[in-house]
Length: 367
Ligand code: 3AT
Ligand code: MG
Image 1 (cartoon, helix red, strand yellow):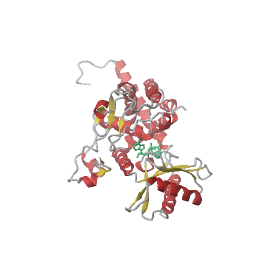
Image 2 (tube, helix red, strand yellow):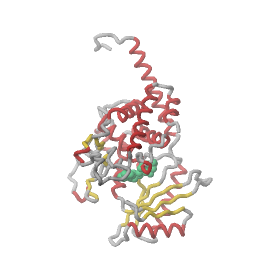
Image 3 (cartoon, helix red, strand yellow):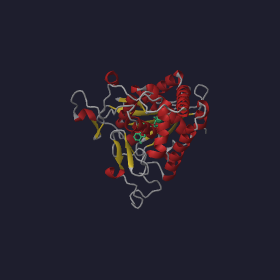
C-alpha cells in the first residue's frame, strides 16, 4: 500500500492472502454447518402444540395462568432437538406457592399425558421436568422444564434475542456454533462442573461488546432510554431489567464499524479465552465490562468455610445481566475450568494450523 515506507515482502503478502482465503472459506462453512443443525419447521410446530396443550392443562388448576417459552426456544439460539424451557405466569393475587403448584401440576400431568413426569418442588427454582421417549414422529423425544413466575429469565431471554437480532449472520452463527462445539466437547454440563449454554452465550456477547475493538455489538443496557422510565416499569424483584429493545430503530442509527468475518471473530474468541481473560481476578459482565472479583465480593477464598463444598463458587465469574449478585458460572469447578480452558486452547491450536474448513470443523467438534 501507498502509506507503507516499504513494499510488503512477497512472503507477507502470500501469508495475508492465504489467511484471507482460510477465513472466508471457514465463514462459509460455519454458516452451512449451523444451517444444517437448525430445528425443522415440523419440530417447531410440534413444540408449539405441546406448549398449548400444557397451558390448557395448567389452566384447569390456575385459570388465570399463561405458559411462555424462554431460553433457546425463544431467543433465536435454538438447535435441532433442544429442550423446551417454559415459564408459567399467574395473573392473580391469590396464587398457590411455586412448590405446591409443582406438586399439583406433576400429579395432573401424570394422569392426563404420556409424559414422564418429575416434580422438583424443593429445588432452588421449583420446576416440573417432563420428557417424552423418542418416537417415529419425534426421533429424539422431547425434554421440557416448567417453572413458575421466573420473570427475570423471560427478560434475559428477550435481551439475548435483541442481541441476536442486531447482527444475525454473525451473532447467531457464532453462538450456535459455540453451543454445538461445547456440547460435542462435553463442556456444557453445569451439573458436572462445566458451563451452561446460557453462560457460553454471555461469554460471546461479552466478547463482542467489550473485547472487540471496534465492538461488533452495542451495549443495550447502557444506551439511554428515549423517554424517562419509572422504576416500577423497569425493576423486577429489585433488579434493574431495563435495556434498549427497539432494535429496528437502533439499526437505523447504529452500525458496527467492525467488519471482521464470523471466522475471524471465532478465532479471536478462542485466543482471548485461552490466553487473555483474567480468570483469577476478573468478572465478565455484559452490563459493565470487565469487573474485579473483589469489587463484587466474589474472591475465590478457599479458606472460607462459607463455600466449603466441593465446588468453589467463584473460580470462573460471569455476572448475570440483571441479577447482578448472581454468578452464572458458579457451578464451574476447578476441574471444569481446567477442561474448559483446555478446550479453548485446543480450538485455537486447530485453527492456527489453518486446515481446510471442513476438516477444521470436524476436528473442532470431534466427539
Ligand atoms: P440449550 O439450547 O437448552 O442448550 P438455552 O439457551 O436454552 O440452551 P439454558 O438451557 O442454559 O440455555 O438456559 C435456559 C434459560 O434459563 C436461559 C436463561 O433465561 C435461564 N438461565 C439458565 N441458567 C441461568 C442462570 N444460571 N441464571 C439465570 N438464568 C439462567
Ligand atoms: Mg434450554
